[in-house]
Amino acid sequence: AQTVTQSQPEMSVQEAETVTLSCTYDTSESDYYLFWYKQPPSRQMILVIRQEAYKQQNATENRFSVNFQKAAKSFSLKISDSQLGDAAMYFCAYRSSQGGSEKLVFGKGTKLTVNP
Amino acid sequence: GAGVSQSPSNKVTEKGKDVELRCDPISGHTALYWYRQSLGQGLEFLIYFQGNSAPDKSGLPSDRFSAERTGGSVSTLTIQRTQQEDSAVYLCASSAEGVPQFFIYNEQFFGPGTRLTVL
Image 1: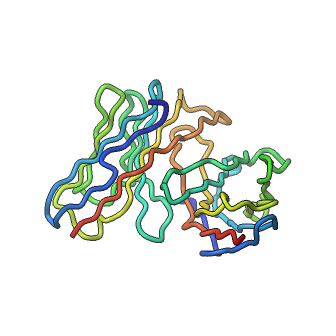
Image 2 (image 1 turned 120 degrees about the vertical axis):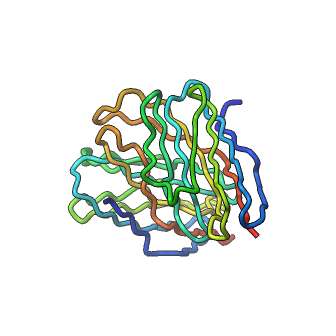
């Protein structure tokens, strides 16, 4: 079974600075998807960024980018120019690309605080 | 509505009572998921519905948990004889999944969840 580990329960960053959240995962599959989700106090899960394992290029979405190291099974999220609105819980998630296994497997999350 | 909705937003119940949680997926989405988020934990998969296929119930923690999806749309998660350890946020998500294929991804859109407190 796949597992996702987030080793940083809490992180903090100064506004306008850069922060990196860590995630490692374990799988025997070669093709899969990885995600970062943001959960603000409203509880609404918001997709931040997605990475397909077969793509070598790291995904980027505006201020958010990932460092995907397939051999090391590492998938970190970098937030540049941090804003107060970035404060939230961040969850790393895994999904198999095999048909019939669409469920997401989540890590326990990292609480990000942004200091003004 | 444009998004996934869930009701109630909050539910407080007494130990031993049955509860029903409702999820209205995005119109046209064929796939529906239930997840549970316990305090300080990530989301834990419970059950997955896809069209008319048999649901994937592999994540249900005990036989006190059940779910149904009527008419391929609204879903109800039922917890019988609630226990204090059932206290959690229950999140529903839907996606426009078609026939499962490799390298085809359809985003899961989440509802705001139901916070269940069992006293």
